[in-house]
Amino acid sequence: MWTAVGSIAAIASVLLVVMEVGSPGPVVSSAPPAGTPAPTVVLPAPAPPASDYRPPQAGGQAPAAAPRPAPFQATIWLTSGGTARVFAAPSLSSPIVTELPPGTLVFIYCTVRGESVTNNGTTSTLWDRIDDGYVPDVNVRTGTDQPVRPSC
Image 1 (cartoon, rainbow, N blue to C red):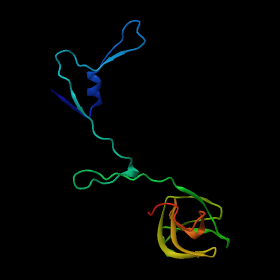
Image 2 (image 1 turned 180 degrees about the vertical axis):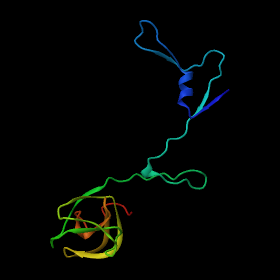
Image 3 (image 1 turned 90 degrees about the vertical axis):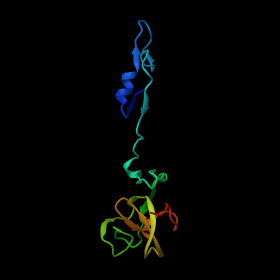
Image 4 (image 1 turned 120 degrees about the horizontal axis):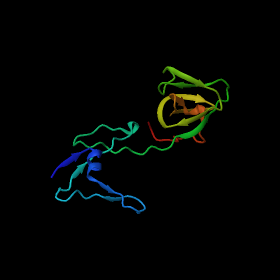
């Protein structure tokens, strides 16, 4: 008995495709030629998408990746005018990554507790993770003062 490891070419070489005259299509036989033992084929497991990769733990098994919820769609909301600053971390002393004008559509991927911020008459420690970084939740109109996505 022989073993083909990870080779689709080995599988294809074992399959016999016979076209019969007048038939509607090929007839596929997975049986090896007479007298040849059936092969054992071992294919590697597909790799997870890069964004869902979790390193293997003891025992060689990678933990299952939890499904991610779809991002939450919201808009930048400021009553004082100006722009909402997006920070590299959930802190006002963190580097400013960019600034967004009121009404800008943003997608919230996760939330985290950080430095306390007051805006629009509301004070909160909740920060939203968006594409460019972190924005205080008080600067984002989500319809609630509670997290709209799981913790980062």
